[in-house]
Length: 222
Image 1 (cartoon, rainbow, N blue to C red):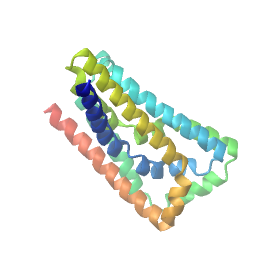
Image 2 (cartoon, helix red, strand yellow):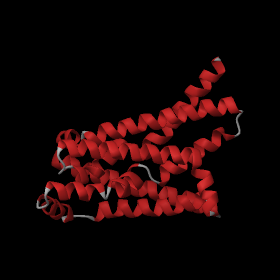
Image 3 (cartoon, rainbow, N blue to C red):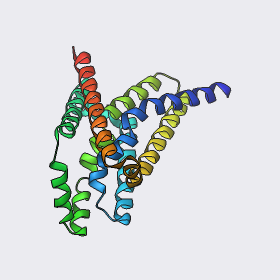
């Protein structure tokens, strides 16, 4: 029993440590803030709840059925890493290269009605907010790696490790819900200049993460 408890705690720790920097709920909250900042409190709460549920669904489906889905379509993990890394690089580069466009976008958003804002955000809740901003190719790759790590264990250890990974996923989704729902507080603490610096910093990190995932995919292919 003690060995199983140790296995559970060990896999839980590994899963949280592996998923947290990839999902990065704090940095992702700053990135999605422009999408959510003009919503009413009720609409924002509903949107954040849907994003969290979407992220949880992606992670669970990836954990249990990801390998079979890829085999069904004949797609390898390195290809997922390469394609997802390129998408993340593009997102990071676009965030780094924007200058005054955000101000113009904010003015355009202010001219929209609340119903149009809600409809516009609903169209973007899954792509790009949930995928790939919140849970992208990096998250999928990490979950593939974690599931493969425990696939060779006996059935009881497999169940214990899977339970630990599920708990880690739930914890990450709770953090996403908390930070996405409190972007105003984060922005107010940072200030305008702090928000700009943080956005640029996390955009650069996203670009680097995307590049690292793509390079890992290329290395795996060759």
